[in-house]
Image 1 (cartoon, rainbow, N blue to C red):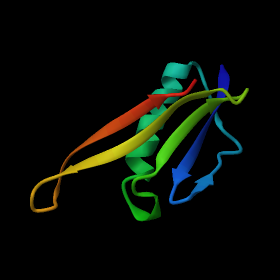
Image 2 (image 1 turned 30 degrees about the vertical axis):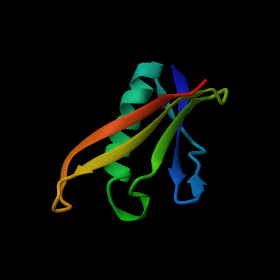
Image 3 (image 1 turned 90 degrees about the vertical axis):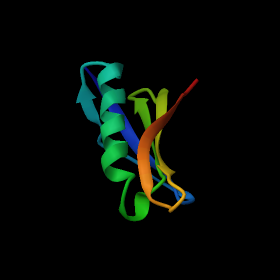
Length: 87
């Protein structure tokens, strides 16, 4: 079990997760990051923000960004996650 941290980045600022969550694997942390991005980055003042995942040593795992595709009328038709591995 390892502690992972889920920071929000966007709008010219960052909101840091100082407590983190203990999870059994990096894969579980990435799945949780997708859920967090789906829930927290789709409404309110965090629309379009990213969720950055790092382990307890500060090694970045991935950045998850939720994007909406819009129809010609401006309505959101589908959503996808754009992820980028950190090196």
